Length: 329
Image 1: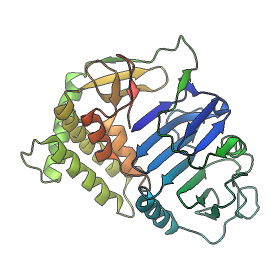
Image 2 (image 1 turned 30 degrees about the vertical axis):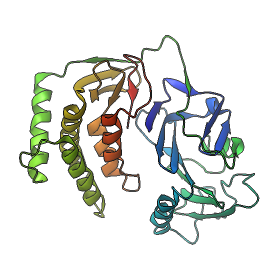
Image 3 (image 1 turned 45 degrees about the vertical axis):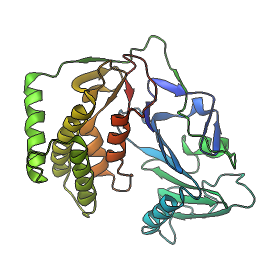
């Protein structure tokens, strides 16, 4: 399950529950967007702070929850991944030293272990672990202060644990305004269609895919290519953009071949214009170029390109009405 929420159009219900946590007053959180990702034994809720500038991810809280034994391997992988950048000390923008109580939740289960460490003066990891469940939380704020951060403080104040629960349902939202249009789609201009076809051909050539037409084989090759590119220490911004266009064009082509979906130009009041692959009745859509750029730009974000492809291909996606334009990412 992958669900993306654009919070400039909607807001959460006053209370949300996911995995084994509950967040009260969720409708008041200053959010730009949110993602809910469900995998066997793992549920991740990523909350991006609102900045007033679309697509500028100025702050976020990533809450990854695991249930054992199914989620133990992924939990250990995530621990190792973040642990590689662990710092022994850091100073907050406020000038105070980081300690384990900074951004710590107030009432974890008494028998759970808790540890915390900084990745920098603006990014922190908290780990909560019980016998059968565990949680890793990453906090990141690129601007402003930490202790009174407008997104961080409400989450610390309103999050509570529900040990033993394991909730994997999608989160319900309310529209911010009943009159706000969700968006509209239109046919791609011919020059854009040509550009995407040429980009897909470049990706085929770069990845030595020849005449392979099997959509799953193409998606697997792109997933592997993303992994290889993200292992590089530095990549120029222009190179990321070019790879994102090529990989995204081929990934979108593969998805269309597997599902019968089609490329469209999508516009909404909050998101502007983007090139998206949409279901025939416009219930769902995804933005391959944006997806690939995000994965190439954030190497510590899980590479779920193949998971997303398989979930859409198998129809394992949230319910949405015709022209519901439910974003999947």
